[in-house]
Length: 505
Ligand code: HEM
Image (tube, rainbow, N blue to C red; front, top):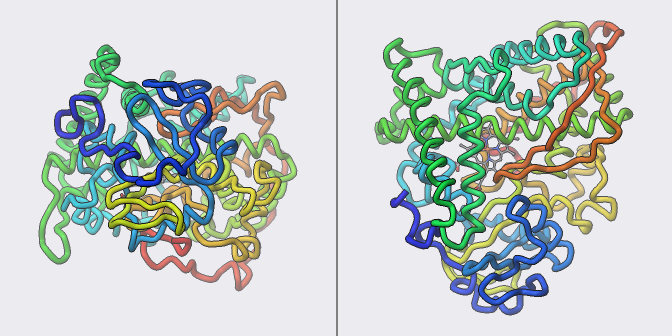
């Protein structure tokens, strides 16, 4: 832990906003700021993101919050957020929650500082693991894991039980990344309780979030001890997995094979054993936690919007027909299902913010001077609700916002669930393929019935998840007719050039 935190519990190199924003006084903050404590009135340590959404609505496109001795700037207005996407002037900032994860993920891809050489090395070695060809190789394994979910749900249905959506989506996405990336089976669907790896992961994510809002880390002594135990468990799990692979020899060219055996194409360098450990933890965590939330929110909205579900289902029937095993290319043809997913990620981007820092002295949006190294959080969850971009009904769930015509008329950099620039999500295509496939399969098999008394509550642990969401299922009666061949436009290859960044970037 000494590597990355100071005696105050702040990430090493942490800069409070007054050090980086010479005209900070021009940026509004919540009323009733208390001496020493800061903007703590009306704020909960369990819901920092939802509190920030509330403050954003009151304070406008740029605002600041103070917790004890640290002050942060938040940006969500579309023009300012687009300015921060300018890679020539801004880069990823590893701060707060992300920096708090350094004790567990070190210089793994997600938590690496921009200057650390292992970032470029790992990026170049691992990016081909997300190429179209690699993704097509993962597809059969994704189908196999989805079958396990549906067996599990069929059993619940027969027993007349409702299903635990976030719990089961977490099982699904953990098994998917474990199998496709690492040839490992956690046996999640055979367990009645979450896998200990998941409990340890939730523990470290929650602890990293808590560290943001606690003035002195000694207040968290007990939690810190639990966190050490959680990290030890994550390390042990990963070490066992890597040892087994080394003993058994290479798998089928998955991510772990790449990590262990692939040299950099130009420099010939390889990832060190310590770095492999960091990357495996990073991918196991980043590769499932956010996707399970995205699927859970999408299922919530589908259960509350039967008209949307019916339209999505009709598309699945039309595109897939009765085939038991939809092919890789048939997933990208579920255009409307994908819009449902995008709309769920708009309202609840499951990684709800990302931080950007100035590469040199600059002026944000032509109005706010920033010194080199000054940073701000881009509040994606509020950028996605900016009425100037999404209209007065921005809070309403409406997948047609992602109709290609509507997308073309919107300004760039207004939809950023996967972050931006060189440090955007490497697993974006993986997540979109997996989630669209699973939604297609579930829509085809079940009708979803929500509990009318359920009100969406969102749990925060750096990522977002609907809390306590359960659905009742009904098996669909109708057997769809043969699949309809793709129209010329539908069949067009995707414009994806880089395997990591889509055209939106
Ligand atoms: C819906 C699902 C997902 C969402 C919303 C999401 C979101 C994000 C965001 C916002 C970032 C940038 C964070 C920052 O700028 O600090 C990121 C980075 C990253 N994500 Fe994802 N992610 C998802 C799925 C995945 C999957 C499936 C994987 C792996 C298979 C993955 C692996 C990573 C990694 C390794 C990074 C760091 C990339 C780098 O800095 O080079 N993510 N993700």
